[in-house]
Each structure stands twice: as structure tokens, then as C-alpha cells.
Length: 156
Image 1 (tube, rainbow, N blue to C red):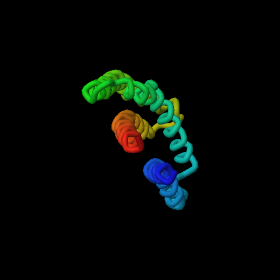
Image 2 (tube, rainbow, N blue to C red; image 1 turned 45 degrees about the vertical axis):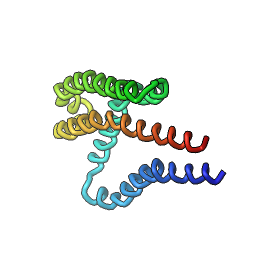
Image 3 (spheres, one colour; image 1 turned 45 degrees about the horizontal axis):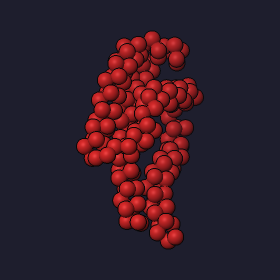
């Protein structure tokens, strides 16, 4: 029982505190935001965050959840590496095409989304950021699942 509680504490520290730290930093930056940003800027940030949520769904194609499932079906490390690299290259190719189209259309999207000029660069940066972050799930899931396998082997 103590081993499970210890593992729960470690998992909370690893996965939970990262999310909490981000929220704390955002809260501490609030006075800075209110001093330098206008209400229109707040609206633009909200729209950019909405674009990020939608783009993240499109860029990941649900492969983050299926990767975890398929990882356990692989019989060897070579099969797991092939799975990870196949998913990576598929996402790089398909998302690269989607990103290129979005970057070409960014001025049009920006003018219609924000209603005023001047936010195209912010939209482009948000799309590039979301594209890059769309690959983070692969190493994070691998580390998590390999640690789970090690813990399961030591508890047997």
C-alpha cells in the first residue's frame, strides 16, 4: 500500500505540478497583463487560445490516445520505435501540409477572426507553436509507459 501511495505522490509531482506551475505563473503575471494590455488585446489572446485548441485537435488527429494503446501491442522495442517514428512522420507530413495552407491563409483568417489588421504575426506564431507542440506527446507517453512497465515488473 505504501508503495502505491509513493507512486501516486511521484506521479502527482511529475504530472500535476507542471500544470499547477503554469497556472501560478499566469496568475502572477496578471498585474503585468492588466498594466500593458488593452481589453482588445485580451480578446485577441482569447481568440488565439481558441485557435490553439482547435489546431491542437486537428494536428494530433487523435493519435496521442491511440499511440498509448498501440504501444502496448508492440512486441519489441524495435516495433515500438517503428510505431513512434511512423506516427511522427505521418504527423509531420500531414500537419506540415495543413500548416502551410494555414500560413498562406493567415492574413485572410486574421482579418476575419480579429476584425482588425495587425494580428497576423500573432496568429502565425500561435500556429507554429501548436504545430511543434503537437509532437510532444510522443516522448512524454513513451517515458510514462516505460516507467509504468518498470514499476509493474518490480511489483510482481
